Image 1 (cartoon, helix red, strand yellow):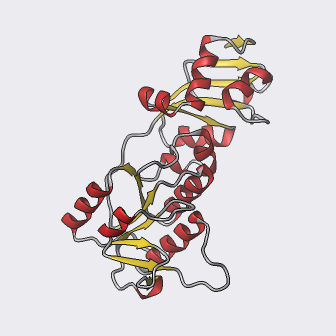
Image 2 (cartoon, rainbow, N blue to C red):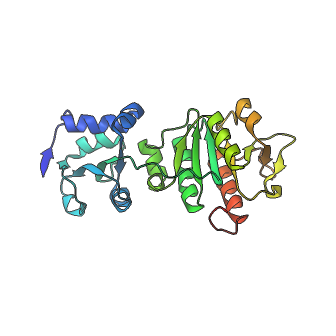
Image 3 (cartoon, rainbow, N blue to C red):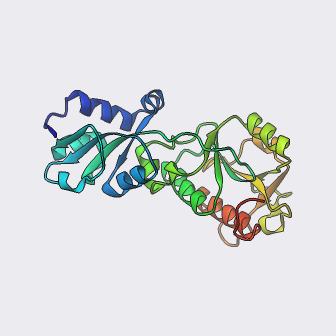
Amino acid sequence: MKKITSRDNAEVKQASLLASSKDARHQQGAFVCEGFKLLGEAAFCGAEIRKIFVLEGMAHKVNIPCDAIFSVTESVLTKISQAVTPQGVVAVCGMPKPKPLDLRRAIALEDLRDPGNVGTILRCAEALSCTVVLLGDCADVFSPKVVRASAGSVLRVPIWAMTAEDLKSNLVAKGIPLYGAALRRDAVPLDQIENKNGCFAIGNESAGLSEKLLSLCDKTVIIPISGAESLNAAVAAAIIMWEARERTGGQAPL
């Protein structure tokens, strides 16, 4: 096992670039995951573990096969993870292969930029058997903050990025409705939607859904609430996905 003590080491710089740059991640088809739990999740899911950087003195905790394992100082690990308090290990992993596109129970996110929201939605999507569609300028699902917030679900959930037009075309071809979550007077309460399968769109945290996407929706829906004017995007998405699952009896889309 090679020991690295310099923050200027080429391997360290490369891993740090993956942590900070969306372009670098997608050009190399790789991302970083931090912590022994996430590393274990990645290995269990069959992800390609390309490199492991482990804090000196903690190498005995790494029991995952990898051809490039480095023992590093806390200063070096901090540069790679970009976290104030690193969790002892950071790995460079290959991105998972795309999973089949199934829109019968799906959540579409338009311009959702908060990594915590996106990661939380991915976690809920796995728990509630939903496909996630990314529209517009969403937070990169392989950024360290999203990966961490997803608790590993980013490795298992079907995630697709496409244009609003492509989403609508795919839905029309399958006879699947598109619902937009929006505070509009003509919005239908969520629990009154009859079709038990569908794609629900959630908009930007402050701006909501764009007029362009709203024009493509078959209906707009609203979550009946009292008091608060609106809900956090991740909370709204979780409620919608739960309702969609309940309407199919908790089973996979029919």
